Length: 262
Image 1: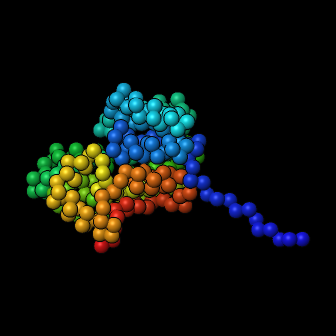
Image 2 (image 1 turned 90 degrees about the horizontal axis):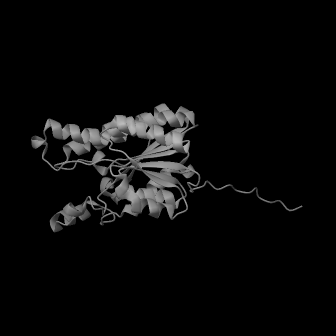
Image 3 (image 1 turned 60 degrees about the horizontal axis):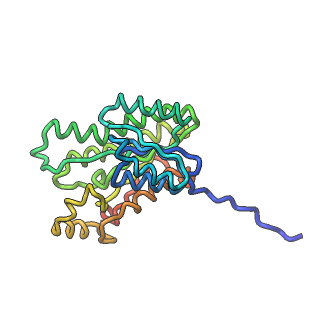
């Protein structure tokens, strides 16, 4: 009798059957992440300030054969966000994936940052990530687990002059990712982050249109020497949310072309 090797089961990258919530999903990285998740088979809920303005994106997502809806979410209004999440879970049964994409900073020397500036950046990036994760994790715990992917930044790993408040907020997101992963692993909840370098989006267009700034940035992206593309971030987010990353938690993946390797 001829020996036959046992069939090898491959870990699935597909997100088919999953339901994902992506914050700040109307444009830029959030939009690309939503499209990537839908392309991998996930139903997608868009957390946006203006649901009506995202109608075209919803139609595009549904073109992948998945369910998609836009939910009104301003991450600075946590009470309203909690109510929206509760309503979405009641309607759709569960949310398996949360992508905390909302964020932003100010361009100002540390000597000129006001208390209001600092508080705004902290609330937008760090407070929202913590409390939205906390609230949805309670639902995930009841449904057997889930995956949270935080969009941090290389600014949380290295110092960027003129961005002290943003660097501090994103560094907090990086460490928060570790803390939540350790606490919530027993519930089957994985928590990871991505830390992109400068990516070609409408949010970075103004800065990157300055030839001197762009040239300096490309030089600092020390291995590949080019600006990143949104798909290079969204693919990593989809991987970390997928069953293929089932033993990965508490990690921050630098998508920086080698900036932090220098």
